[in-house]
Image (tube, rainbow, N blue to C red):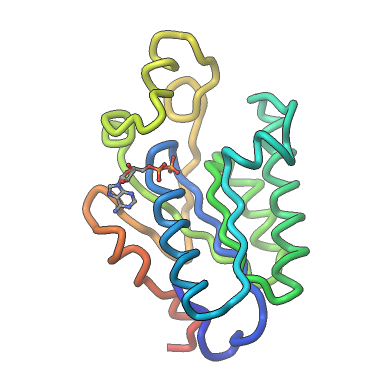
Length: 178
Ligand code: ADP
């Protein structure tokens, strides 16, 4: 995941989408460290922190989720146009809104963090799947709310089959000019 040659000094938006537990935060953290080592300005926008701040008060309706994604896209754009490498880790379950951002934001890279639901559920990093299955949480993506898989992502990371290091080393060939 690099933007080496043509975009050397411009920002970029690395947008990680996928089910809860697919590995977005883990990969985003690794990417962040890698970029910091190279002395590039980097900002990570992670779903949990966003929900507690930027999108506090929003619920899980389709409308609220779209609002959340649009807000994050707006902030990501402000940062990236000032040269920041922005790493977004957000379930962002709906294809149409991701496509909207992809077509309107510059240097937007859609990265599908792909892991089967069974694997995410077995990981259950935050215990949320158990709560969703028992009905304590409603409208949980993958359980009783849809996740629309990206049809043509720029990069796909198969986290049930590949290591974090392999995922982080992936490059976007178009952007890298390779
Ligand atoms: P998300 O942010 O998508 O909800 P997390 O990154 O919080 O997911 O959790 C993913 C879990 O899967 C972590 O416990 C991580 O250690 C594990 N994992 C196993 N293999 C991978 C991989 N190749 N990439 C990312 N995470 C992985």
